[in-house]
View 1 (cartoon, helix red, strand yellow):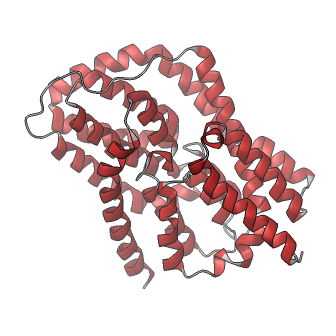
View 2 (cartoon, rainbow, N blue to C red; view 1 turned 45 degrees about the vertical axis):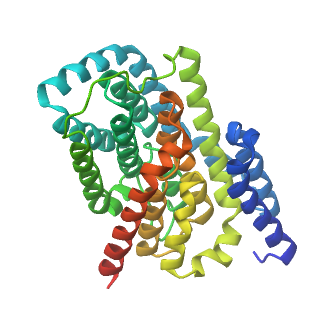
Length: 350
C-alpha cells in the first residue's frame, strides 16, 4: 500500500507526540496507557490498516504478561514479609558484597520469568530491609534496575518491550517464538548483568554504615495489584496498535538509517519508555544484527533516567528517589555501557 505525503506527515506527528508528550506533560505521563491507546488507534486509522487479525492481536498479545504480573503480584503480597526477613538474614550471613552481587544478578535473571514489575517490587522490599546509608542503597537500586531491565528482555513475559518485540517479529522472516529474544540476546546481556553485580559488590564492599536508608512508601492492597495488571494490559495493547500503525513510517525512513546512527539515536530511551520506542522502530524487514543492536541500545539507555523503563519508575516512586539523584549516578554508567556495547557490536559485525 502506498501512502501520500499527508498520511506520512500525520504519522510523523503522532510519533513526535508519543516521544515528547509523556516527558513534558504531566497528565500524559500519569495517564500514559490511555494516551498511547488513543495514539495507536489514530496511527492505525491513518495507515488504513485496521483488520480483524490486528484487533485480535491487540487483545491477545497482552494476556501473558498481564497474567504474570497479576499472579506474581499476589504471590509477592503473600510473601513480602518472608522476603524482608530473608534479606536481613542472608545479608548478615553472606556479607554485603556477596549479597549485593547475588541480589543484582538474581533479580536480573529472574525478571524474565516473574516480570520486571515483580522483580522491582522485590528489589524495593530488599532495599527497605537492608537499612544502609541512602547513597549506597541508591547505587544498589540503580545497578539492580539496570540488571532487571536487561534480564527482563529475554522472554516475552518479562516486560512490555520484549512482548512488543516478539509480536513485531513473529512473522517471516524471523518467525520469533518465545525463546527468540533469549537466543538473540543472552550472550550479550548476561555479561552485562555480571558486571553490574560486580559493581554492586564493590559499592557495598567498604564500611557501609547502617542507618534508616530508603524505605518504600506503603504496602500494596489487592486493588493496587489488579490495577497494575490492567494498566500493563492496556499499555501492551496500545503498543501493538502503535507499532503496526507507524510501520509505514518505519519502513520508509528508519530502517534506512545507518545502524550506528540508529544505535546512538536510541539514547532517547533514557527519557522515553523503551517499549514505546521499540513499538515505533522495530520492523520485520530489519536484519538480525540491526535488531540486536537496536534492542541493546534501548535496554541500556533505558536505565539512565527514571522514565526509561518500568523498574526505574516503580523503584524511584516507592523509595522516594528524585530524578536528579538518579541521573547523577545512572547517566555516567549508562554512557560507559552504551560505548562498550557499541564497540563490541562493531567487532562482532565484522
